[in-house]
Image 1: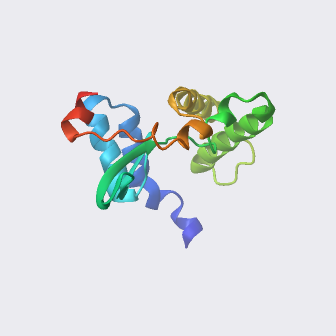
Image 2: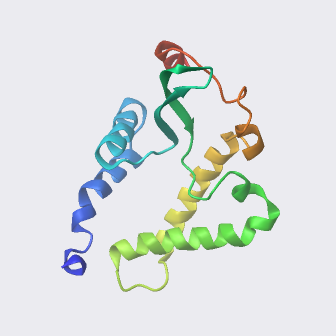
Length: 153
């Protein structure tokens, strides 16, 4: 039954992803919100509620770096991770190909190009990420602000 259904159960999610890919500004923000609220997916950044690190009697909405398919920013830049980057891009291309052809064993050229575009976006995100060491610094990661201050950034 699952195999017969193919990608049909995923179609609303795939449609939303396609819409997000061609959106910008408020329309993109709406797609990101829908991906989170309807499917539990965090794209570009993570968001959640946790105790305030400087006042545990209060909880805050916390926003954190995210959006990477590889474990952390080092995987995108360290010379010793080239084999993992190559395998990751091939994996993404194959997953995209399998959406079209469940029996495929190799990615198509179109889906390899799409995987490379996805990877290029992830590189840009990774460049903005803190390193693991920087991310462990409680002062560097504590940037409490109001909603109006956040939206002004």
